[in-house]
Length: 134
Image 1 (cartoon, rainbow, N blue to C red):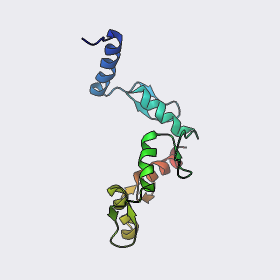
Image 2 (cartoon, one colour; image 1 turned 135 degrees about the vertical axis):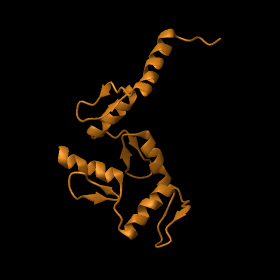
Image 3 (spheres, rainbow, N blue to C red; image 1 turned 45 degrees about the vertical axis):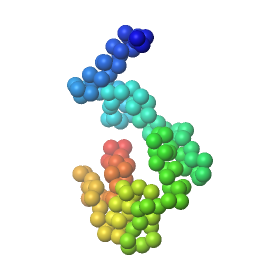
Image 4 (tube, rainbow, N blue to C red; image 1 turned 120 degrees about the vertical axis):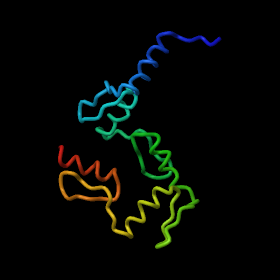
C-alpha cells in the first residue's frame, strides 16, 4: 500500500475542485490574469519581466516557458514535412504552415475589438491589446 500523505491529497483535491467551480484564486498583480493553479501564475509572472531562463543551445532564442523552447527546437530540425505549395517555405508543424499561408492570402483573422487593427496570429493581437490597456 503506498504511503499517502493526507494533507497532500487534501490540497490536490482542493486544487482539482477549482476546475469545477471556475474559481481562480491566484491573481496577477500586474494584469487581469488569474489561474486556479499557483504554478501557472508563477509561469505567467515571467511574462512581465525580461527573465528568460530557457535558452536554445543552437541560436540566441530564449524564453520564459520550457514548452516554448521545446517547440522552438523543432526549427533546428532538418526535417520539414509541411511545405508551402506557393513558395519554398517548409516547417515542422502544421500550424506554422497554416499561419504562413496567410502571408500569401492576406487574410488577417484576428481583429482588435477596440480599433481596426487586424493580424495573422492571436499572439500578435494579444500584444497589440496592451497598447490600449497600458
